[in-house]
Image 1 (cartoon, rainbow, N blue to C red):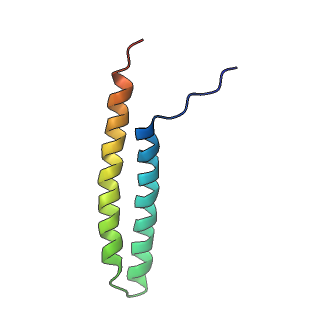
Image 2: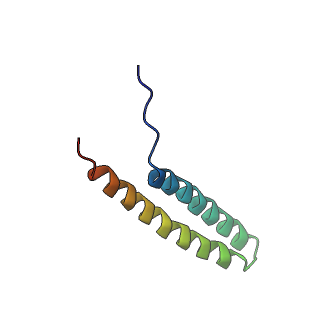
Image 3: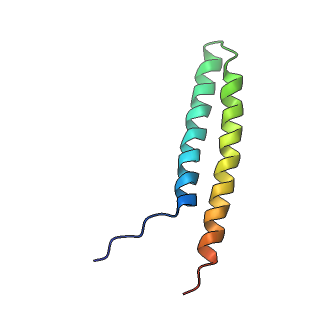
Length: 69
């Protein structure tokens, strides 16, 4: 049985940035619960990584659709 193909680099980056987004949202919640305004930095990081996730996900989807067999 052949091994499954490795995920495209764009798809892998989308998964990594999604993980960063989720972790930064969790860090923002913890920060705000503790009364620290440092949570604003975590919210900004969540926004940036969310945009990166959408970009790499769309790039992976576009790359997958353009392959002709």
